[in-house]
Each structure stands twice: as C-alpha cells, then as structure tokens.
Amino acid sequence: MAEAEARAIVERLRAAGHQALFAGGAVRDRLLGQPAQDYDVATDAHPGAIMALFPRHTAVGAKFGVVLVHQGEAHVEVATFRTESSYRDGRHPSAVAYATDPREDVLRRDFTINGLLFDPVREELLDYVGGRADLAAGIVRAIGDPERRFQEDHLRMLRAVRFAARLGFVLDPATQAAIQRGAARIREISQERVRDEILKMLTEGRARRAFELLDATGLLAVVLPEIAAMKGVEQPPQYHPEGDVWTHTLMMLEGLPHPCPPTLALGVLLHDVGKPPTFRRAPDRIRFDRHASIGARMSEEIGRRLRLSGGELEQTAGLVADHMKFSELPHMRASTLKRFLRRPGFDQLLALHRLDCEMSHGDLSLYQLARQQLASLTPEEIRPPRLLGGEDLIAMGYAPGPRFREILDAVEDAQLEGTLTDPEAARAFVRTQYPMAH
Image 1: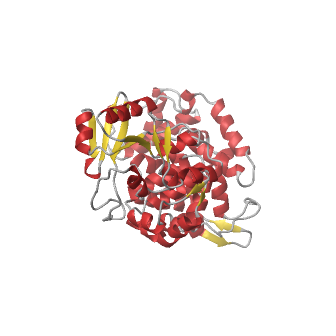
Image 2: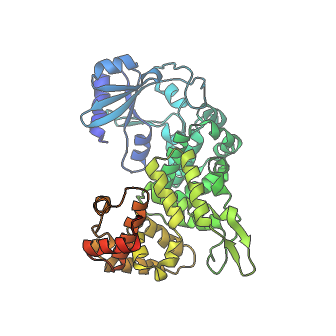
Image 3: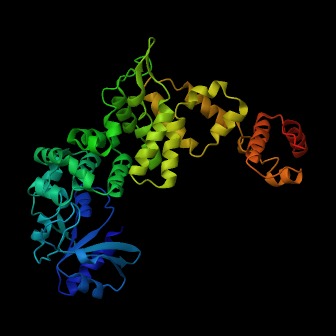
C-alpha cells in the first residue's frame, strides 16, 4: 500500500483540526528498513467525523472505532484513539471508550514494537513504550502486564510467536511465561483466526522457528496436538539419520521456499502426521504401516477443524496421501505413471518429495527420475484427447449407469498404454471386454 495515500488521509484529518498519526506495523517495518505492507492511521477523530470527511469508506468496525477509508486505489484503516476496556470473549472489547491522548491509545495495544507512532508531517517518531529499543534488541514484548494483554485478546499469544519468528526476534521472558501459563485459552478463539495465524507462520519465511516457538510456549500441544505428538517418535536410522519425526518435519519446514503456497506448507507440516499412531518395532526395523493413508485422513480432520477451504483441504490431504508413491515410479505401468504425473498439484507433490529426501537420506534418484519422465512426455501423451465418451457408449447401445466409468477408465488405460490409438479400435475393445447383456 502506498504511503502517499495514507499521508493524504493524515493531512486531511489534520486540516480538519484532528490529531492523526501512522500507527502499528508500518511504523515498525519502516524502522526495520522493510517495505510496509499496510499503513494504519490513528486519530482523535470519532468514526462519525471520519466518515463525514471521507465519503468513500467502509464502516467495518465503526462500533469499535475503526473505519476503512478508500483513498485512490488504497484502503487505509483509520482508528480512533481508544483506552483499555474489558474484553467480553477473549477477543472483542465489551465497550469502547475513546481517548484524546495518543499515549492512552498505545497503552492498550499488543506489543511494544507495534506500539510506535509516526508523525509523517513532522517526520517524528513517538515512542511511549520502549518499542524502538526492543526493535534494536530484537525482542517481542507485551505492552504493560502481559497477563492482562493476553486475557484481553487470546489471539495475541499466537501473534507474539508469529512476529518473533518472522522478524527473527526472541520473546521477552515475562511475555513467554505469560503465554505458557495461558496457552490453553487459545481454545476459546475461533478456528478461522487460529488458521490464519498458522498459515502466516507457515508461509512468511521462518516456519521452523515459528513451530519451535509454538512448542516452547505450549501452544503447539493445544492448537495442533497431532504435530506435538511427533516429538520423540523414532525413525529407522538407515532412512532417517537426522532423528525423530519432529526433527525431520522441522528441517523440512526450514527448507520451504519463500514465498510458498499454503497447501505445500501444510503438506510438508502434515506429511508424516500418520507416523506417531502407526509406529511399531518390527524384527527388521521400525515401521509405519499405512502412515500415508492414515495421515491423509488425519489431515482431513485437521483441515476441517481449522476451517480450510474445500480446495485447500483436498490438496493438502492429497499431498499427504501420495507422498510415498514415488517409490513405485520405477515399476509403474505407463498408464499409472501418466495418471500420477498429471495429478492436480503434482508440482507441489514433487517439491514435497524433494524436501523429504533432502532432509533425510539425501537420495534424490526418484526425484530425478520423476523429472526425467515429465520431460520425456508431451502434454498430449500425458493427457491425450479421449477416444470415447459417454455419448459414444450410448450410441453403441449401452445403457447409462455406474459401469460407464469403469468402461471409460479401461479405454483410457489402454490408450495411455499405447494399445488403443483410434476411436474404432476403442469401440472394438469395449464390445469385446464389456459385452452387452441380452
């Protein structure tokens, strides 16, 4: 979002006799020398005055003192100075009391590094809580009493972890201790908000650090107990010299590309989620029978719990279900191979497999084989035009029904194998293999 649009809003509010300042993440990122993602404005103007000054607006949270102002192509959140108040549900204030002093507004915010204000007219930083020093020291510290900050808004516990991971900071000891004591309260937050924080942790570039902090604060066992269960689950050293399932998963998270599709990140996080419940010591070695299929079912349950979209849930569970299939590559029939290579999201599955190998035994031969097979086949060979469709079977005298899928799949298999090349041969194949009942 452009700074110029936010500055224009500040100047207009000032011209109308109000205080107005940049607040929050944009100020933090500016001091860190990073591009600001969003510019927020804090002001002593009440929502009614803001809406009167800016006819192009959306009253997204006017009852909490927040108005979204549309300035040019930008959308800037303009919030009225507020004081601390009681919170009715661990997320939303039960009442809003407006303030005229920006210091009061800062004192009810979450972390010192997010409590900085900036006057873009005077080019002046306003720091009432030591945020600049904490930025320099690399510390995420709650403003005031951390217990109170987290009681007001339980989601702040996850946000503390996310900011510390993303910025490469540490958690202030008192702030971390307060999270550890209150971790169970995160269950009171909606799963959609939890999901959003988890997805940001996975895709902002420091996923391993985020999950180490989730573990250290006790949040992991509450939010994703299936991942916490990976700790201490041994693996066969000949395939996994790096250590247990938790260590392996952390290493893969560290290797995620940035930017990263959320479904790939989720697939990496969950690809071995079926190992803890399937662990057994066989006479020859440690085994995890059917861990991919069991993990896929667990991934679906986790995805539904986190309110993933249907597409995200299907793709994530599919990555978990299929991540072991590369071992079958050297022996796949041509039809099976082509169906495998054309599965939706194969690029993500291939990326997951590469990480899986790199962070364990280091053998990339199956990864290279898959790439070679992809390169050697044209798109038409992998997904040729169908020789027959349902209407063709009807024209041949077959009655529509569940058997159509079986017949058409058999025709396509033969086509992918190269034994059927034209529609007439396909019709002869159907008549021979699937004679009509008389």
